[in-house]
Length: 567
Image 1 (cartoon, helix red, strand yellow):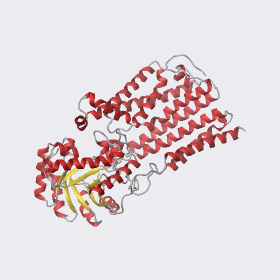
Image 2 (cartoon, one colour):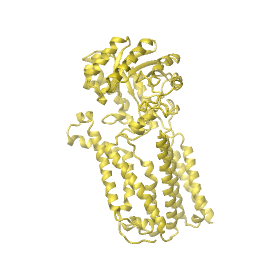
Image 3 (cartoon, helix red, strand yellow):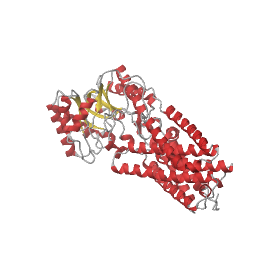
Image 4 (tube, rainbow, N blue to C red):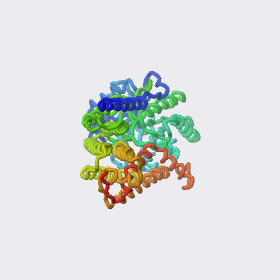
């Protein structure tokens, strides 16, 4: 009978898990299929994992050729951002070989001599490859970064225009052309970046296509009074497939597919000239812009499609493998604990199986997400470390669950280890939360890393409630949950620190919106801007999930009664 009960309960939990996994990972409609044929243009940088312009580790020529061969049947042309070094001088020749046109750029920054060398390389390449280099772009977001003033930039634009026959432009976010309308006179075509995710007031993917139309019309209206009929190129537009949420803008594979398909529909309908950012995910950008910066590509860093341009799209196409892995871990826990859980009554057995199944899901989700978004040995080392830390805490929690469900007295050694484990996660959460509060623009909310510890505390509370039938402030303390008096005298300081960090994080997220130039213009004054900014912050599901984790993690540290509890 006990074995049959265990098998039936396990099958029930397994069925529920399989149903949820299937329901949450069904293929989604990502909009109208991209018409047959090629895309207009894709931003191209040939940096795979281990290569970085920041570290001046550049890809070999064969990597550049492999990438261009892959893109040859996907796009008519590519846009480059530099003309000097790193194998970029080979791009026009290789593009010709594979039938691709090039919108060639030169990278401008603070350094005068570096700028001169870049422009010389651009001019030389454009003049030597007029059949391939169709347009040139002098500088990319130089004004946005504040690397130089507009007059100096105009001087560079004029210098290149005198030296090449191709149309010449400058690329920046659309608002910079509105702020410096004199640029419209200087360029042969207006190159604007429209990135709804990065707008001062982020746009949801559902309204992103409408936003594109509105911005292009706004720039056209501005240009009409200065240089009527001047062509406009959407030089960058795209959506991240992974990373932190910004207000209404939620990264994701399905959302990236929706945006790209919607953008192409708008471009086709209105005849817009566009370039999608970008062809390949760029691992090196994670050092500058975190997870979100490295995941804008139509192809992953290992050159596999992130999503299809036709048909339904899976947010996680490997969900069945992850379900199987979580199930295997869960059966391993059952096998190890079989003797202890077989005698449990139905309710207690179901509770144990349900929470250990959640642990298994958390472990697989953590390992997969952190590994997928790791791009260096150090980052992968952190992934292994956090996975091992979660496994260790899960093992301690399983032991404590069994003690509670068997009505066993508390174990001082186990209680001490549990408390130390939670102290580690609390202090790490404190560090990450203050980081999000102070400079969180490119930092992801680490929900996956702390989901298991938070669920573990809820499991302790649930098991205690199942045995005693009630939960009060005494029942929230570590003494009571862990079964021994191990409460520290400074635990409330930890709870205070994490609570203040959580409030600072919400404030930091809110102020990040209010500091935006376009946001200030749209909502001048604190009284007008604050409700909008706070609304964007509190709409962030990732932020709310992280706050929920913090609340659960701090519960035992608030309850300090100092009484010995051995039950």
